[in-house]
Image (cartoon, rainbow, N blue to C red):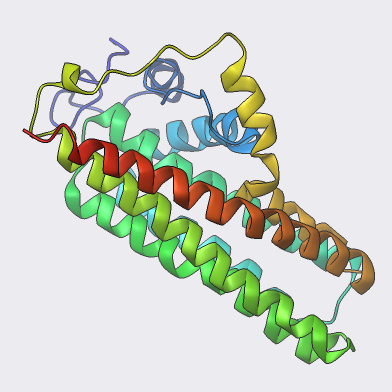
Amino acid sequence: MSTSTRALGPGTQGRRPAYRDVLVALGAAQKPGAGVPAYMRWVNRRLARPLAAAAVAAGLGANAVSVLSALVSATGLALLMACPPSWGLGLGVAGLLALGFALDSADGQVARVTGTGSPAGEWLDHVIDAVRTPAIHLAVLVALLAHHRVESGWLAVPLLYTLVSVGIFMSQILAEQLRRATLATRPPAVVPSPPAPPGAGVRRSLLLLPTDFGLLCWVFALWGDAPLFLGGYALLLLVNGVHFPLSARRRYRELRSLEGVRS
């Protein structure tokens, strides 16, 4: 069987593609990694590839994988709020959140390799992310109130993290959509992309690691010890709080630059 994305599209074969065929095809259907945060670039996307291949081989579409991602993440957050703290619980919650994150990447890979991407599917993916982004921090707030005896000042950390994470998410998603819509109205050559210096993509990926959702997932492995967890969690909030205005300023300037070349 051919391993091209066209060959794996719906209606082109009388049977489901084999797992190995899909896995090979996925190798040619990956997004560029330059500048993507390190965990997402080198860990999450690689974890997502076999998950996406298994989904396609099982006949699951991208939307089904998106819903499965939401359910896995919700299970982890429910356990966090319902169960007493322990190291085992922390590792379990971290693993479920990381699996939900990998499935969130897998849905896009399923859509690309089968050629079934759609506006409705992209909408569903973004809506799930828009709920999951604040939900993880609100779940921390509820779990701290229910299970950890911490000073009231620490309760402000998940509240502030909620605001920062939602701001970063909306800034990124809206900038991507607005840039895509703007560039669709003119030839791509109107806005040239300057060549990046060698190694710049790797350095940027490593610098962005503290802002990576995957790193946030695994900080829950410290949930069995409240001071350790809160220290790591607050440190991530601090880094993301500094990153947010810098990133928002850059995206704003990029969008303003597109106004100057509007056709």
